[in-house]
Image 1 (cartoon, one colour):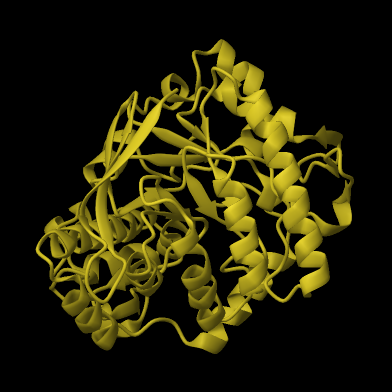
Image 2 (cartoon, helix red, strand yellow):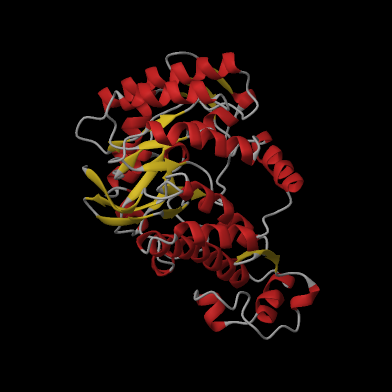
Length: 391
C-alpha cells in the first residue's frame, strides 16, 4: 500500500493549522479529518452508506479485537476487511496496543511482546510487533499502527522513558515486518515529559515513517498537559508527512489539535455519547433525554445538516430515548459523527481562507465542553476497565 500527503493551505500566521490531502490507493482523504471508529469492522448501529453520508472519508478498525474475533485469518479468507464490512474507502487500523495495555491484570510485558488473556474468554495469547503487523496485513488495511507501549498520563519520567524506548525498538521490528504491506505509521510516546517527547519524535523521524501518530494522550492527563505535549512534538515532525492524534475526539480538542498542526483524529466518544443521548452542538453538549426537550419542535441542533436534524425534532429524539428505541441511538450517532466531520470541514474552509485563527477563537469562546472534573472522572473509569468492543 502506498500513501502520500501534501499540504494545500496553512502553516502560516499565528497557528500551525494546515489543510492537506492524504492520498491512498483507495482514494483521497481531505484533512483535517475525523475518522469514525469501527472497532469490530462496524461503526456501531450504522450502515456503511450512513457513515459515508456523514462525510467521513476514512474509518478506523481495531486489529486486537478482530484478531480475537472473528480472527484476522477469517477476515482475510473473506476478502479482507474492506469487503467484509463493505467499505470502499481507506481504512486505518489500530494495532490494539492501547487495549492490550489496559488489561493491567491480564497481561505480562517483555521486550519480545505482550502475553495477555482475552477479555472474551480468558484464553492466553502472545502479541508481538511482528504479529500485530501480520494481523493488519491479513485485514488488508491501508494504514497500520505498530504495537506500542502505552502508559497512563501520570506515569513518572523513568517508566515513561522505558516505554518510549521499547516503542522505538518495536517500531524497528514493525518496519522490518511490513514489506509489501500497509503503510505503518510511527507512534510518538513519552508521557507528559516534553523533552522525552521531543527525543522520541526525533528518533522516529530519523526512521522516515510514512506518517506520524501521537499516542498516549487523553489518558488521564490535563488538557493543558495535552496541549503542551503537542506543542513539543508537532514541530519535530516533518511537514510533508501526515500527523495523527490518537484517541482524541471532543470538538474543542479537535480545534486545539488542528491549531497545533494535527491532521487526523479518531475517538469512540461521538458514538458512545450518542448511544447515551448526549449530542454535540455548536455551543456544547446537550442531553436529549432531559425533560426540556419533550415538547421541542425544533431540530436537536438547528445548525446541523445531518439526517437526524434535517428530518426529526428534538421532541421525537427525546421520545425515542425515553422509550429505549434503537432508532434514537442510530440518529444520535449519525448526528455526533456528522458534527465532528462537519467541524473538520469548517476548519478546512477557514484554513484555506486564511481565517482559521479567527474561527478557532470564536469557536472556543462559545463552546462549553463537559465539566473538567466530570471529564477526568470519566477518563479514570474508562482507563480502569478492560477494553471490550466499545465504539
